[in-house]
Image 1 (cartoon, rainbow, N blue to C red):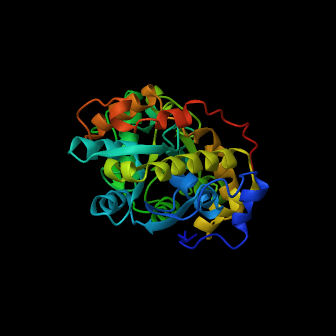
Image 2 (spheres, helix red, strand yellow):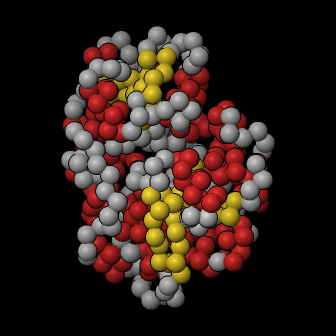
Length: 342
């Protein structure tokens, strides 16, 4: 199946969720225009829900998406000023700080590292855990990518040497990942959804041996501030209330996701119209426990440890260095609503 990335806004009417979800339109002044660099992905999903269901507008933020082709381009769009806010990995924002750019995190989106390591079902009798992958070739999106680095960390934590016990091959985007796996070019894949859910639930040829969304160890990935919304400190200082309202909208989007409103699934379908809705439903249900707007000191420390392993950072960071004053207070009292599922 070809996976298509839909860059259109959701169909008219979806923004009506603001009223039905009790978002309270009119509470914030309208019109603050903000360009957010992002791309269609489950790991950035709260941003898309906030835009397509009118939550940003409800908090007085008029968002324009600047669609990137990958995570590195998101960073470049922020650096060049083509975007005001980057929807990117926290560790990449730490890298920018270490190189001298004063960037800070204004909102976070996950509390787990949500990749998944899947294996072709023909190996089910002999491959039952990560340690059984010795001697196999693992497909990743690209060398040095998040899927590559996280798989190396998981392998090392299971007692394998990622440099000698396995091989890696770059298999590109979700569409080419699915093709490579289906055609037998690879038997193991570390991926972000929807690739693994297509292979598990539509193709029915894969099963997981490690799952970040399920909260599998190592512990570093069980309390991990994965993706964020970040901006240059100068922009935050100049647009402080807008930045805080982006935080509030992000938190509300996560609440709406967890509350199980069916239009959230419509947002996911609009992002990936070539994927069966039931596959996306199962994918979303598996990721619900991962979404959180909270970053604590330990989750930041875990990102720092991972960043050092990945080679993107070399120093430790405190919350005060990474988060603007007052923003921790915006998420400190958050309580997750009961996840209702889809």
